[in-house]
Length: 468
Ligand code: DGJ
Image 1 (cartoon, helix red, strand yellow):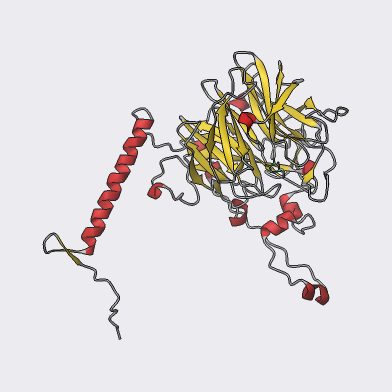
Image 2 (cartoon, protein in one colour):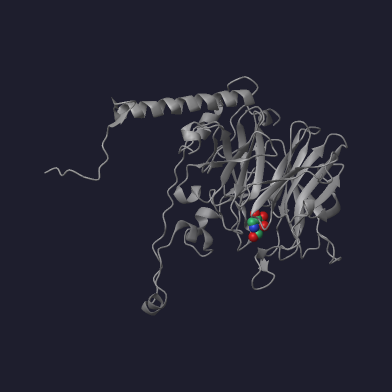
């Protein structure tokens, strides 16, 4: 029997001096308003893009394969047997995949940190050549694991060579004190060169730790993280910026070094708190017009700051903007596509992985808008942990507009030298596995998607291949 609900609102109502409007009329008016709003949004976008409406979609058939959403099911092993006494003392809560990742004795450790298989360019078996395997040990041309953590890549126009710079961490991991985070003494900044982004030659330490002088920023007892190098067209110098800190991360500064050659040696110039603010995770970004910017986590990692460098890239200017205020983001990686600036950041959870977020801006100085989690494929946990890794840089793939390589670190706090590289295709404008919920489903910004692949390679025809 149907009951009448006295609290139910009537579906029709009176309007305009007694004429009766149906619910559908109201719905259609709302739909009309919605489309008017979308039209207005498109016109605004048109203005911003210089008069031309651009529906930025990925149009490289060679990259379509990389836009396939590849699911990955990782089975959590059954719980280990415990004595009844232990079980009573501390009841077991269900294990999650992230617990397994963080447990260095996990039975599925090999899934995250495979030991036996390595990317070995010198073995060059036809089946494996040029394949990136995110998470595998990656050997250089001498057969040693690449040491370039928290790094970035410079394409040197003069030598038409890629240089990969990063933290050289091939030393023992330890805790400086009970409450200190896992660390490796500063060894220096490693540099590797390549023509194809796959086969890397070790160019040695381009900036080495200071062994004797304990007051030096680069003394081995300090912290040197996330080094990045850019070339200054005016001065003809290669300039390195890095995060410089003390063992407790209280110095919170940036360091600057300079060289005449991409392969160093770099002369260390100085460290400072940029704009007199604390600065931890950082990166630098060189825009098409040659202006370079420093972007750093500040105010105890609660916000990011961005500001242009001086013309010689050796200092910051007085201009600075606070962005992503109160959002607690770090590990910024910036890139640009068709006039729009994009940035991937991580949350702040030490060496443990967390969710990546995308941000976009029409001006590099902001305002920056939030785009959601760019990770597609894998599984729910891997998407929520940036595929168990943390952003460090985004590298454009020459010849394929809108296609980039997302570079991330899968940190291994039990043995930091064994941290792995997670490189994945990042595509602006391709389909994502779930719609992003901004602007009622009509994005103002092209989508940014990082696609999980167990193994993948750059498509034939990207410029690097021609030089092999
Ligand atoms: C997260 C940062 O992104 C890393 O560069 C490093 O500083 C770790 N924190 C240290 O816990």
